[in-house]
Length: 199
Image (cartoon, rainbow, N blue to C red; front, side):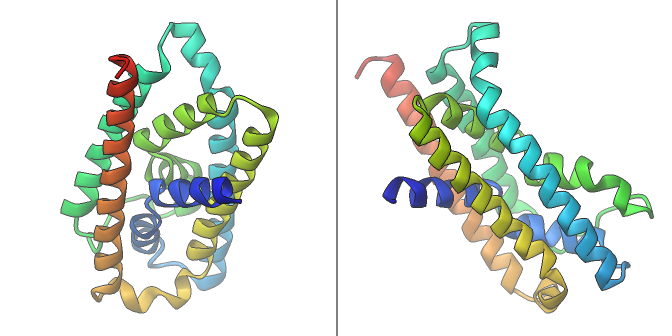
């Protein structure tokens, strides 16, 4: 159970849910509530499919290109750190220019790379490679699914959260997420260096 909770929390914050929520609100601000909910469901499904593929088959990419797990830890940690810096610096109320028919953008950019960015992809590949047996992979997959559904629920209920978009609520939550993501990135990098140097 402790493993499940740990993986769930990591996945949840790695997907930067409050930043994703703010971007979703910005991109769907002119839509009706029913249309916004439909798009939230499509985004969630796209994130589930893409994340599961990366989690389960990412390790084969390591084998294909001869990349060691520790080298990828360091690279993924660096990308995740840049994501964290971007989260802390960026204005979550910044308006986004996008085509009028936002439904065409449910996979790109709403699912990828806003929800599942380069840092998230790297972490998913590392975690997938670390899950050696069926039990941990199953638990990890369920934890990932639950975390994605949690983010999806935030998007689905975004109609009730619009009042925070112009206040300080999303700003504070986004900055806190940035701090947590930066700590996760540092842990990835330190673990990669430690294992690489056999410390």
